[in-house]
Amino acid sequence: MHIVARAACFPTEDREKVRRALLNLFPEGEVEEHEDVIIVRTESGERLRQLIIDHHIRDTARSMMLCGRSGRVSSFKLNKQVAYVNKISFVEGSPALGAIDIEVEDEDIDAAIDYLAESTVEVRQ
Image (cartoon, rainbow, N blue to C red; front, side):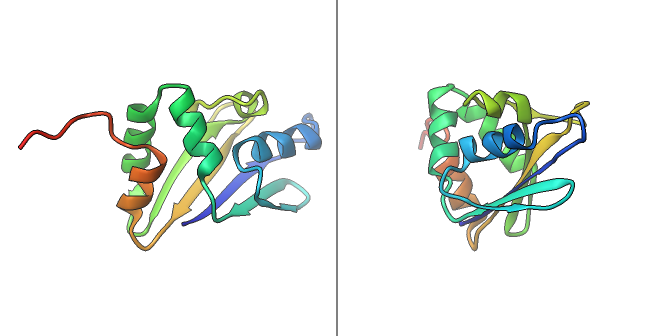
């Protein structure tokens, strides 16, 4: 699994806070800082997975990831301010201060989604 998280850094924002928001989601990620965007790349979604479990939003997270699926990639957005305080909230649309754009890529994207946001619904046979 390869994950890329991007967050625009507006002139009115503290760059360190934007950086911290990204690292709260992906603490083991490699950070790239550009003039107007901060990017984190990682092979691990363990912290994101744990936040999804801890906040009891597996079904919502799974739904957002499945809706954003295209080929080997799933794209979705997370709230930047919420990530800064070590929490997680999915975003639809374009919030005023922007969001964290996440792309999860994997040979088997369905398995990656199952790992990050395991279904809570029992399958009956």
